[in-house]
Image (cartoon, one colour):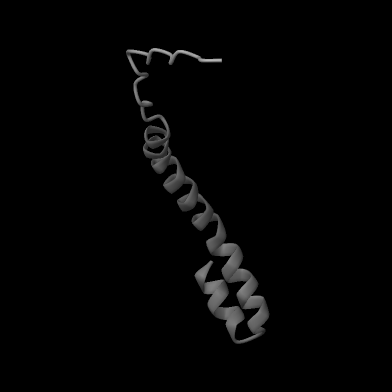
Length: 66
């Protein structure tokens, strides 16, 4: 693939750009997918932090004077 890109560089620069993008995009997508897959347990752990415990005693209500 790189030889084809090198050969096309002298012919039409735009065609060489299209070849370069199509040659490296699948690898980049695979790398991005693997990176996100590796980070997902970390993000899941951060999202599932335990909440603060509920208060054990409730305050007594104040008397109401009318």
